[in-house]
Amino acid sequence: MTLTIVILGIVLLFFLIAVSKLNAFISFIIVCLFVGILQGMDLEQITQSIQTGIGNTLGFLVMILGLGAMLGKLVADSGAAQRITSKLVASFGIKYIQWAVVLAGFIVGIPMFYSVGFVILIPLVFTVAAATGLPLIYVGLPMLASLSVTHGFLPPHPAPTAITVMFKADIGKTLLYGIIIAIPAIIIAGPLFSRTIKNIKATPLKEFYNPVILKDEEMPGIGISIFTALLPVILIAFSTIFNQFLDEGLLKTIVNFIGNPAIAMLISVLVGIYTLGLARGKKMPELMKSISNAVSSITMVLLIIAGAGALKQILIDSGVSDYIGHLLKDSSLSPLILGWLIATVIRVCVGSATVAGLTAAGIVLPLISSTGVSPELMVLAIGSGSLMLSHVNDGGFWMFKEYFNLTVKETLSTWSVMETTVGIMGLIGVLTLNTFI
Image (tube, one colour):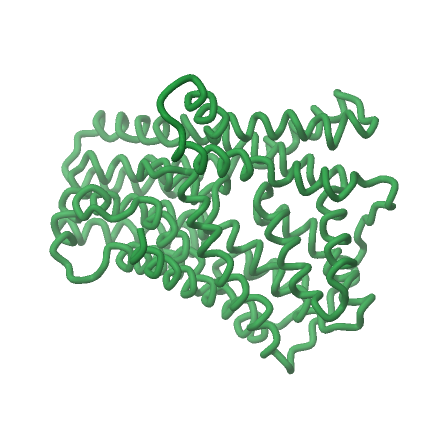
C-alpha cells in the first residue's frame, strides 16, 4: 500500500503541475498533505514535517542560490559574459567555432541560472551564425548542451546543490566529479551531435534577433571576466584539493572556511562588485539595485526547492523512505541506475528538471546509507536523469523552439535528442567513475 501511495502522489504532482498548470510550490504542499494523510500521519505532525523539511532544505541553500544569482547578474550586466563569448569566438576562428561556444557556455553557465544564461548568450549565437554564415543549429546547440550540463550536474545550480545537501555529499567532490563527467557529455551531445543535423534550417524571429551588444570599451577585460565568473569554482576546488594534503590546524581550518560554498559565493560576489562594477566606474546604488533584482528573480525557484524539501520530509517521517529503502536494498540493480531511472520517469511526467531531481532524491534517500553508494555520484546520477527526454511539458523545450523558430517535430529531433544524449552520457560517466572511486 505504501508504494501505491507514493505512485499516486507522483501522479497527483504530475496532474497538478503539467495538466492543471498549478504553481509547483503549491502542488508540492498539496502532495505532502495527500501522502501524509494516506500514510496515517496526524494533521499536526504533517504540518510540522512540512515546516521542518522547508527549514532544513533552505537553511543552507538561501545563501548559495541568492549569492549565485547576484554573481550571475553582475557577470551579465557588466558585459563579462559577452566578452568571454566574443573573445573565445575570435580566438578559435570559424573552423573551431563550436568549441568556442561550448567553452563560453560552460564558463558563463556555472554562475548563471539556465534561463538567464540562455537569454544572455542566444543573441550572441545569432550574431556569430549570421557573421560566419554557419547554420544556427550548428552554432547554437553545442552552447545549449554546455548550459544544460552545468544546470543539471554542477553546484551552485539549484537542483544539484539541494540534492548535495539532502545526501550530505561533499560539494567540492560533487563539483569535481561533475566537471569530469560533464566534458564527454557536452562533447557528444553538443559539437558531435549537431554535425549530424543536416536538414533543419533555423530562422530566428526578428523580435528575438535584436541583441543589446556592448561596445568593446564598455566591457571588462577577458582575464578579469573569466576569473570573476569562475571564482566560486576556483575557491571550492582549491579547498577540496589542498584539504587532502593538509594536517589538522589553523591553515586547514582557513582553507575549509574559504572553500565552504556559501563563503566562496560571498567572496566571489564581493570580488565581482569591485572588478565588474566599482572598478569600471559604476556606483554602489546602481549595483545594489541590480543585485536586488537578481534575488527577486529566484524567489519561485527557492519556493519550489522548499516544496520538494517538504515532500522529502513527509516521505521520511511517514515511513515511506524506510519502506522504499528496504524494498530496493536487495535489488540487483545499481542504486545509481535506480536513482537515474526514477528521476527520468518524473522528468518525463512533470517536465521540470529541478522538480524531477529533488523528488527523485527524496525517494531514493535511504539508499545512500543502506547501500554505501557514493553520495556525490548519486547526486550526478539523479542530475543526469533529470535532464532526460525533455518534451512539450518542459519550459526549456519551448524556449528553444521559439527562439530558433522551429516546429515541434524539429524541436523534438534536435533539443530533445540533445538533452537525452546528455542524460545518457551522464549516467555512463557516473558508472565509469564509480569503478575508480
